[in-house]
Every structure is written in structure tokens, then in C-alpha cells.
Image (tube, rainbow, N blue to C red; front, side):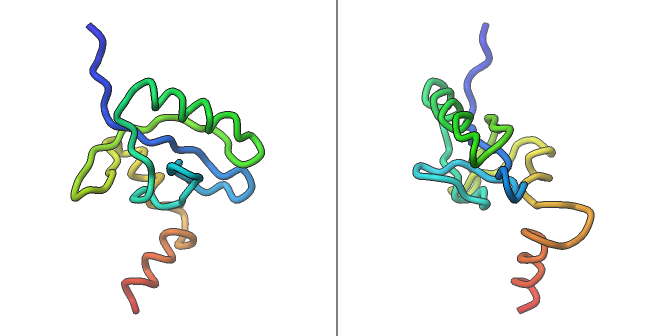
Length: 104
């Protein structure tokens, strides 16, 4: 018996910057909360194909499992939670922005 389809987002890395990015209905974002949540398996497969064809902008596109909490997508796997937070070796990018917001 096949495993039931669970909500997903298309994620990849930006080719030039290397940042984790998420597919929206009309482009890409670095904020998981703005990602397009896919609940239909066929639609998810099509969106992944579209993302994979954008070789000048993205690399390593794949579907990541999410759940909806408070109306926003939240990773269900620790790897995706780690990727959503940004690099772990020093504060820059998403981590620096978060620290700046909490200190203001």
C-alpha cells in the first residue's frame, strides 16, 4: 500500500549565493513561511520539474516535507529545520538578521 502524500515545499539552493531557497507561486524566496505548500502529488511533481529546469538560478531542487502550524509551513525533519535556520558555523545571513531583529 503506498504511503499517503503529505504536504511539501520545493526547496533548493540559489546557484550564485548558495542560500537555501523555497519555491513560491511566482518565484523563489529565502523565507520558508512564504513558500508554496503543495498538497497534491501530481502538482508537486510538476513544480519540482519546473524548479529543476531553472539551472541558471537554482541547484539541487527537491521536495521537502512540511506540516502547517499557525497557518505557516514548518519542517517535519531536522535536516530541513537546520537548513531553514541558515549556516551554523557563524552568525551571518538568516541568523544575523534574526539576531538583529531581536536586539532592536
